[in-house]
Length: 574
Ligand code: ATP
Ligand code: MG
Image 1 (tube, rainbow, N blue to C red):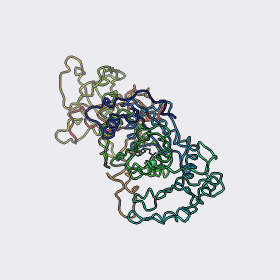
Image 2 (image 1 turned 90 degrees about the horizontal axis):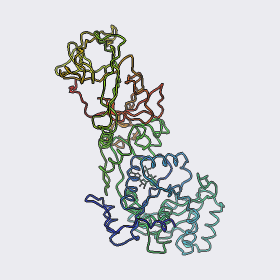
Image 3 (image 1 turned 180 degrees about the vertical axis):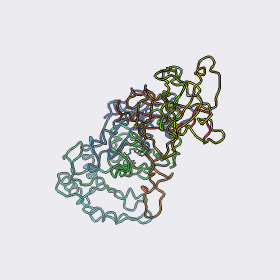
Image 4 (image 1 turned 90 degrees about the vertical axis):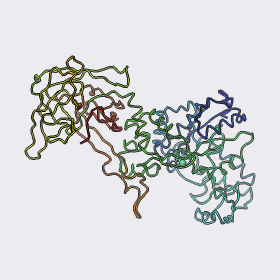
């Protein structure tokens, strides 16, 4: 068995656990002190390949992998592929990509629950021979009707006391394909009066005549999650089977199933923690699938989705998700995390990493009347004040530049330190300019051009440039600029809790109709022509942006990851 080989890196029970350990680590430390499992720590992440992973899964992956690393243990990736009707190879592939991208390394331990179908089947026969399982001919409706309630015992199936021989014969014929879907099931024979409803003769196998993405048409009986999961953990030598709170009530069943096959002291231990929930989004695969298939979003990796692939496309980094997971911690009770904490984590990471550049999203042209035509002045700009090694770059300054439309006002209020008739502002890294005139569109009244003069002695970094003005604006040379499409995102849902709806409505009624804004012909500094999909930048004063996966040199597309909270100008919000 796999765990026999996992003897390396035994723990002495002290670990390197520092002061702040979570409750799962506290449990592990205690067990290690007692010498449990010979000091082995082995975790797993068990996704069902029926959708793309979301940030809740990321939390689970980082938790399981983090524990394995911390205790010098092992981490397995195991697909829980027990339901052939909902599962697809596309999902398997996306999950592999996402787990890899997060940096969780399963080494050579990639498994599928379907790898164990033969072993599970043999164990099921054993359990039948021990008189602990039986074939039931009733429909799922009949079985459900006999379940009872938490305070009322259930009724025993009329098939419950079949002989071992009859059960074995029927089970083998189920496997051989003699029966139709739903005609028979295999049930564990536990206790129809048990206070825990999950122990009232739960199903172990159902008949599904369907093609499986790995086992093809070999099987037409498929194990239930509860039956397959603990046994898979056992087979892999998992010591800590970490899952979310909804499985707490399943734990006695998990243990019951392991008890039926376990022959040594070793057994995996299930530990539950609170699932991650985040404001302004939904996190169930069923709902995410609905948003995708009904085209409320443009795919699983739409940057507005809480999926790992969506976050990646939006510009999130694995490091930011780790920071976030650490801040959230590991809770025993369900809670909802403010999405602002997630945004804070990506800002914290990109602030250190992302090169500063200038881009104008809503351009209006400024003509500097006393600057020579056809002349290019290369000005030097720092790439990242947070990173001394990031160096600097040269950016062309010309007679005509673009600034942001809302950085100009014809009749500014007091304390408007940006551009206005008669006002002086600095163009970042370049000169101080003064607005002397402007031209309006006769029909719309919109500003079409702004006329300025510049002070040749005011260039940043030059002697004589000590003169201070209150506003500094970002700009891009009009003749040298590169065009781009820029996507701005808002929250996918209008409300903190999308499930909170009026009667007759569902969570989709809370979708935010303005969650995507696409801006064409934005102006970027020319160096960005070389930007490649996945590259990340801070567009000064505007936020962090990431090159979209569909971006090309002649058709640049950027996604805004997150706006900046602060900007470096002393502007006051008008
Ligand atoms: P969903 O409820 O979104 O459909 P699931 O739990 O059915 O998800 P699985 O593929 O079975 O999806 O989940 C794999 C693992 O991820 C499980 O161990 C599950 O407990 C964990 N997990 C799922 N959602 C979350 C979450 N929001 N926070 C933390 N862990 C989660
Ligand atoms: Mg599940």
